[in-house]
Length: 372
Image 1 (spheres, one colour):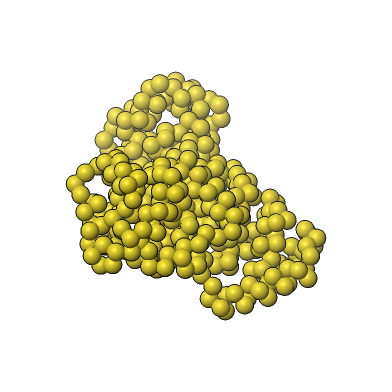
Image 2: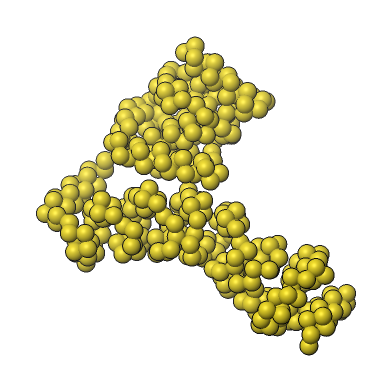
């Protein structure tokens, strides 16, 4: 059948309201996907593109599961497939979504990031496995900090992981055992990162790392003994008094925050999670970055006897009034009881979340911290 005749057949089927004709339409399009260059010419033709944009979505929603699956498999590599259709298939049952997430050239970084936010963990894992993942998607995966998804990312050798990204994964491997094996075999693992990873892996992987990077095993075994002692001693990530960790760790956190901010993934919820994981310096850096404040301004706020200063900074970045008591309690716990002010100060801090926009809270914070 000629391209023109096939186009006309598709348009006739599209005008029909009969259920069987709608399924025939989908099957006709599936068959076209195997038709080579002539099929692509049909699909790129203006009448067919208009058809796909106007009615394809309703057809797919009404189609049987096996037809949707066949369509997803056929369209997975098609560059002409409508973006809305591909995004719907990517949110379908995981068996249907998998080939689309893995290979569709239509899915852009923002589409993949939306899947990380809206879809199931199984869908997120497929995103992390997608070949040649770009930095914005990598940053979003690291920000969500889902162990199974991090593990899939660590096993994706083609993902565009920077040294800083690998550092985040190596750090996470301390608590996520499944990360250790893929990281130990990762082609971009460096000698410095291998030394950090060595402490947390089993004997077989330690030997593999030592052979690959010619590590000083005596020194590393001493570090391992020290790490075990520290774990049994219950050492905190941030010491009382809010002291910052070593410069290397601070630099890594700053790079991570900058990456998340550039990708639009640094949000108030990330700050709360940092505190819940007892990472005070990460919370302070995130608050500074989100609010475009000076580091000294935030440090002075948390060390003061006026919790309303911290409340104003939180209001300026969109943190909700209902969340602030939890944040204040966590900061005080990690910062030797500061900001002070006791229960009365905490009550006053509620006024920072008045009925005004975040930019007003930001200006009020800068003025107040300047006078403090």
